[in-house]
Amino acid sequence: MIGSAVGSADTGPTAGCGGCQTGAVMRILIVEDEELIARSLHDGLTADGYAVDRAATGDVGFWMASEHPYDAIVLDVLLPGMNGFVVCQKLREAGVTTPILMLTAKGGEYDQAEGLDTGADDYLTKPFSFIVLGARLRALIRRGPTQRLAVLEHGSLRLDPSRRSCEREGQSIELTPREFALLQYLLHHAGRPVSKRDLIESVWGDDDLGENVLQVYIGYLRRKIDEPFGTDTIETVRGIGYRIALVRPV
Picture 1 (cartoon, rainbow, N blue to C red):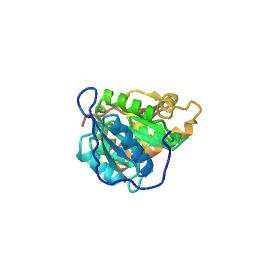
Picture 2: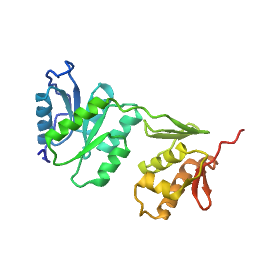
Picture 3: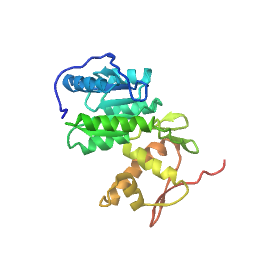
Picture 4: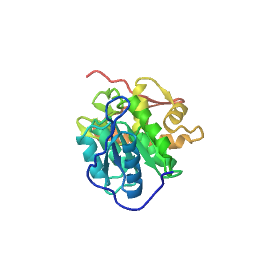
């Protein structure tokens, strides 16, 4: 099992490559600051025939992933500088679709959820088996780059799921992962009433969550996407839930 260790890894790329069964060498970026883990991953993946680069900080990892083509990225959550969540989100916002396997703390369900919300494709909890990590990487590489999702537009409101960005009238709007998922679900059903239970089950995945939590998040969204612009995008449908209002002709 590969667990946690204390130390610092290289901050620049280190090459290691071998032949792959397909004849093409696959490139992997490891963004991990714990020296023993980074070295174990580097040595194991190199022995498996991959070309492996390493970065020890989030900032360097983001730069390398943005500037060089990789077949997959192994990204730790706890990093010096930008943490793994921020790196992942910024890569997706920059249009980088490389598959990302995120490493999270043992029992870190919230870390796992946030990693997936920010654009990661899969995750492993520490300590983990190198055999399992290798299988996960092969599956991600077979699947290929993350497909870009269609941009959702409603009047002047624009939501880009691939870049995890939101804007209105050209102004960027910062949304939390939960707010983003809630708005995305509503926009997918624009013009149609969506029940509160459907929203809770689809966005939170928790049947027992109280409707008051949903109301709070609807309020957050309205204060961000409507109030500053004098718009009324999210309508309350009495006895049912909420609806994205139809765009009225000018």
